[in-house]
Image 1 (spheres, rainbow, N blue to C red):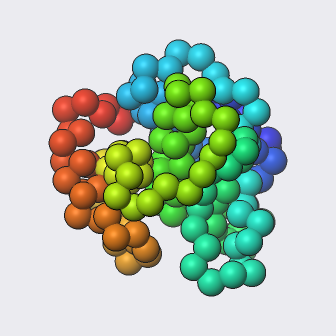
Image 2: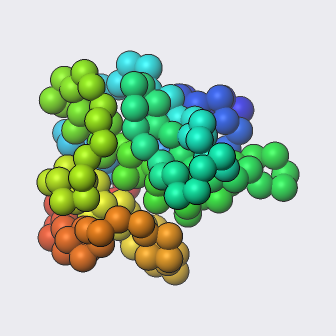
Length: 161
């Protein structure tokens, strides 16, 4: 099944739970950024360096949301908690960049305001949808405390769909 929802597409085969949570994540983040239209040409793919390099992280670049996750035994990408975690973070960058008409997608340092916002929104979504998912075990950035504080401050302004 090809994923196509509000301008975000993918040729990856996602499980039904993953599709559900991708849609919830898109709706939630679009609402936060007051986006009522769709993006042109943003695709979800597996990061081309995933499994080739140690410590490669999901990222957004040039029309791609690149995730770092394995395919399940039944040939679908259905590690829905991990996918939701990575996707929500990257979708914040997509939305903020799109609102700012960003042409170049560059690496942001951990202390960048947008990076903290992306981490905070991802934490809010994960805590609301999957309270048992331990995102901290794979968290590689130095801004965890700042992101958790941002997540707490978003309790009343980020409404999980």
